[in-house]
Image (cartoon, rainbow, N blue to C red; front, side, top):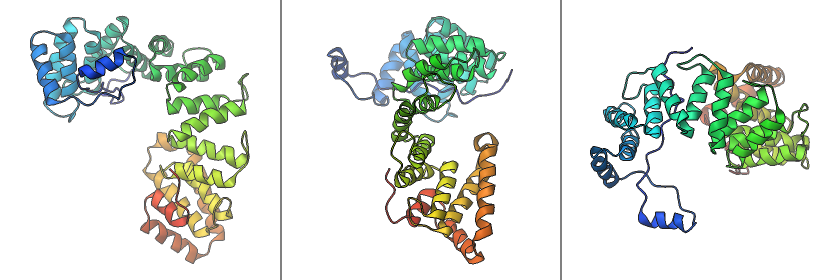
Length: 364
């Protein structure tokens, strides 16, 4: 059991009180834009209603107070209002109070108390609380690690349409965490999250269709979902899509498209995409050959790996980076290596480096 602050628990966004025109639009079945942040007038209205004892206003006021600096004194005021609303069994307030306690924001951190509040609100049916209770049990935060019970709460939140919970259920069935592996169930839950345009769910659903142990394995479905994630801007999916075009799997082989998608991912500092581009620049596949550029990209990948947390980089990326540098050092002249270092010094940002290496602008 881990007894510490955990900032992975996130607070609900403060939102502006709905104007009558937006309410009428909703009643008419019309789409409306995402609510704007709360205004001083909204806050003044919530303050009056909160002082009169309205738990909903107390909750909305607390959201507005916590939307600024996490170290602001407003956070302590938010805790005060949430405690009042929580005493009236307002589930959303109980959940939010638990999040603040888990984050140590405006109140002393107490993981066990945070989990107790998550559980009370979860039993009352609050999907966000069910999701955070599941995460606490999954991570061993404020409670003994219990993946099986975590999956139960993830499923309950997912059944209410909680996208991140649906993603978590899909991952659990895919990996067999808290349950026996079940790739059919995994695909079903990941698809629910993907249909809400969650890019990570789209990517993981696509990768699931590539697994040889999946009875529903299908290259075309894999390409479809990974392509959607890539077009949403997810760097890892953009690199995955580059590999589809490079291999010609489920799509016509195109080194140029492979280069384009890898460049998009590399511009977001995806190390594997940068190393892939280094090989393309060395050989001139899908781009103009540049051994200097290949080495500059290899140096950039190594630089990013040095700055990354050990859990983020991975041993395979470290090994591939070291191999790439050894390979190029063995064939490049000293002047080329020096020029590559100067090129990286002049263009330290990956996107700028690629723009300098490639005459055609990277499509974003």
